[in-house]
Length: 292
Length: 325
Image 1: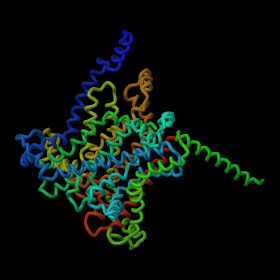
Image 2: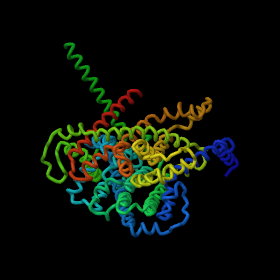
Image 3: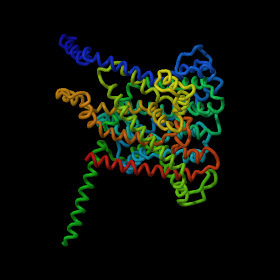
């Protein structure tokens, strides 16, 4: 590295970091944000610490977090006795399947809508766009009828299909992204003999930010989904996901709060991991989308 | 040629020009459009089919079916034979509980949107400043509540807000902020409590939307404003907000429409139902919770609510667009 480059670099760092200038603001903001963050995270911290308390202790705890006496058995108990291992398995299955299905189908659809013109293209695009803003919260009834007609009520397949039926927003994200890819890339690929599917495959890695956005949104949504699993698994408790299982927990037992908190801890940690994993791509994906 | 036909001709050619322009616009909006033929046609259909199949089955058909069901007296299991026309709508309009659910839903959506959007924007602006420390950690903090299933969040807050042993009242009385514990989930404060819980839960998502929107403001504009001696507040009002306005409108609509779908939280919160019932829970109770199931009636409620809101949103959108042009 030359001296000139070095000096440019250090000037850059000085300009970016400007340590002196913002120290004062930073301290004020840091204190303020830390306080707000503590309050914001309080329900989490409460759940985590309650998972280690005795059943009696939580009623007298008030706002204090740390347990007087640590109980280690709540999490294993919730996992084994209260069926949380089943719920967990179901939730993972539903989320992973629905996310995969939605990702693949919306990417393929968005790709075709972006690159090809054919009869009905604008109709498909318009209808998908329009239904985004229809606030009918009750498509659940006909969905229920449809799944019943298909004989998939109280099956895992029924839940997965119903969870994979949305995704209009993702199609629009993919369409607007794929229409920014220069045609020259495809021309070069065609000269190398790439067919339709190969052309799609080379454009997929370019869409990483959108893929990350779809994965994180869809995964979070299906992981937390309440309505669909509640209605579609009425008859079979062993098909419940964590959200529904947790809610039913309230009715079946005389609300075992430490057990409930343990279940909460079990169910939120995997999603937090997904978020950490994809966090970097996340804002970039949305940014690309809204620029269109 | 008579005057009238001349005018008609002119109109016609104007219309033709307008149409050509529209077509041009449309073609330009899809830069790489290609004629589809032969083998490509097969693949185009094969790529569209899976999404369309799912979308038609689980999004479009249900929308259509809701309208059809709403014209029948139907319990969901017998064949669909008892056509009653608009009878369901008539009894719906006279149903007190429906209207109070309707009101509650609107109140919820408006309050929720009004609180969460400015707050999320403020946090997004703060956490995209280059000089702020530990941004990633604070972003994660605000994002974290999103990963708690709504029903669970509801149960947790049932406990935290309890007047007898809840943490919030304990803290408030200990610090002497209030004398007596507040019944947050009683008739009086239940709605505002639910709005705030929902804000707590969803804020991270809107923080991320705003952050994405803010990335579109060119850095040079801020530098220029700084040279002109603008302070942070002036930069926000005169630079940031005008640039992000088109995206802000989309975020506003998405936020409002999503808030109208509130359901899980209301079911999980232990509050008097009169204060917190919403349209989704009304429909759920009518159609699915206990016999006699009234699918037709519940569908009519869904349609009536959906159409009303759609009209309100369109009118609002029309005026927003008019104000902008």
